[in-house]
Length: 130
Image (cartoon, rainbow, N blue to C red; front, top):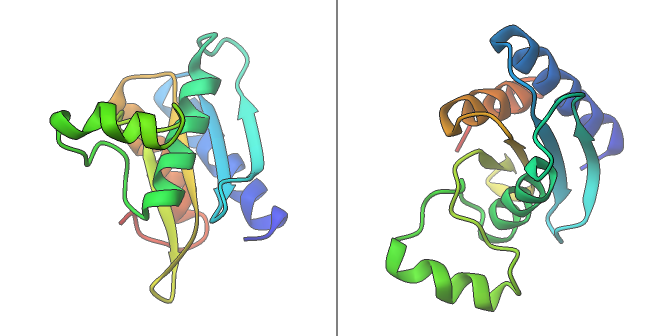
């Protein structure tokens, strides 16, 4: 996952957020959960950045979109991931040739809008949301 690809996804996410009239944070993490790009739009909610980073970490480490976990498992997952797990929708794995190479996430708007922004970010690389 290159920094060029990460920045391209961030730019596409910002464009979609602007079209929707929402202010979000966007995060891209590689498969080892290291941030490769992060941005908080002017006017985004104060804690949107923290939540968005957790979405990217969750999706990258699990290879699944966020929001997948059964409620009964959420606390256990949060403990196992040292608090970095979230079940809030808006994070998607970046999958290339069947391999998860990272994740992209958006947060700060409604969960439906976060999902739409994150999907637009993936689409910038020609990738579908998992």
